[in-house]
Length: 421
Image (tube, rainbow, N blue to C red; front, side, top):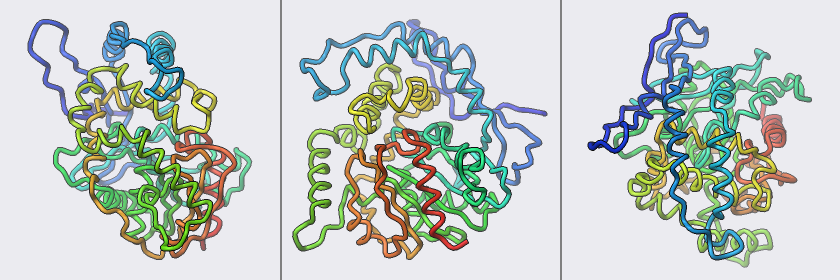
């Protein structure tokens, strides 16, 4: 097949001075456009990820020269992720991690690019072998990426090979959020959850899907909620594992019940001791971006801490996410240098009211027990007039599809069965 090369993001301007060869990381990350793909059509191109070996070698050189702080002065994670844990992560990244393994896996899936609202958006598009499958739009959050969905794609698209029925099949569409992964970075303000939702509706229209479901958690939940508010033609319902109302709960005037009290206690704890990243990224994304873009160790620690805190593993995320998977996700921030552009999503929403009630579209919610804030059913019922599915899952945390792909798939299937065909 004929190919031509397109950079995935603008080139970096090298700093002056003789100290080190220019960092050309962004120019060496390529999404090659592949012609002749049957799913490509007007406005959509098939792409293939190829990263220059020099870029991988440069990363290793940086990891060889990490300047470490002293260890924490406490015996737990109260001051952040412990030094010995980060040393182990970086050591494996240097000597054990194989990017080419993931690059091959990634390219075996279907990857495309479409220009939506003036921005080039990367998305996975994996068709089910069952032609009558329902289209499912999956949206990730921070510090996640489309890597979160890779382990769930097989069960979602080919249920008969994973203990399900053909009627449970989905065609999976998973875009990288603007400024994340290999999507283009916005150069102006205004890319809110609502604007992203409009772009997603445009994408589904371009792909020709006349009926689809949408699913999301974290920022993906905010975008999916916004999509329900817009209620574009073809959207049949939404499923959430982290609805946006959790940070601005719909309280009643009476005394809260036990589930609400427990959720409010966890929310208070998060605001007091767990929301430092949120305050920094919502107020100074550019400043934190310099360190995270320049230092792979700093970026890895910044992201790894959230897998440590937000998974259902008692601070042992490798119980459900091997280091390879965690580093696959971190690489989708490092290679395109997207730490600052991803952080700006927080700044863009600072002080913005996202509590507008949705339409009467059917809504399903799966409450994973180790979520940042547990989801009281009563809150969901106050926000969504057509809550057709609610279930508390037996295990799992904030990164539902990443941590528990089988349970995540089960929940999406169960919600889908509640909807008319």
